[in-house]
Length: 169
Image (cartoon, rainbow, N blue to C red; front, top):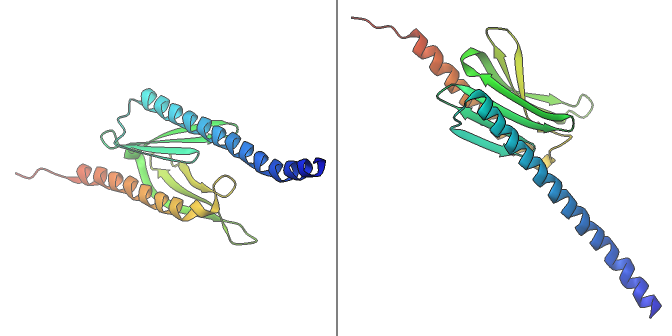
């Protein structure tokens, strides 16, 4: 009888531990998602934004205010919440960057880099980070980065076009 109990205990213990760890991980992800939502709401309220498009992915959220031509970005980090509101009226260029590991040539990070034409500073929005995102999500996050880069460039171009229009009588 004792032998049967020991065998049952040894076979059930790993599955119980795995379920417990999965429950803890799910709860942690829920808290992170809630923090990201709250932080995005805060940046929207602070900057008086009307986001036409919002996307949540992992520890990040991005939103676009077409009317005011602003981009809101929030990222959860262990050190705190990173919040950024970028004025697209001042963007000179925007492109997708991939940082690679020098030894393995594997992609470490995928981000959008936007350069401000008034101050000359660059803003970086991270979409994929090997340290936090699962490798299976890399391809979809690269596509998201390209999509958002195109959205930014469309709004940036519309500013340039409307500024160059003249009324001829």
